[in-house]
Length: 67
Image (tube, rainbow, N blue to C red):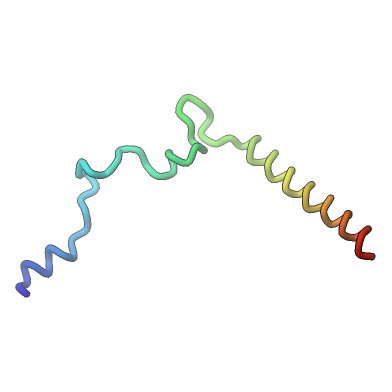
């Protein structure tokens, strides 16, 4: 192998190349919809509250069944 061949293997892709999408990965997640608030904070807080309520109800049901 020549040094030139080895240096070509170790090169990182050019971020300005056409093969890379202009849209960033986090923009594809749906958390940053175009034309809306950058982060749906109330939706996230509501989801977390739902998870906490589900865990509390599950714990209460298991407590009644097992004890």
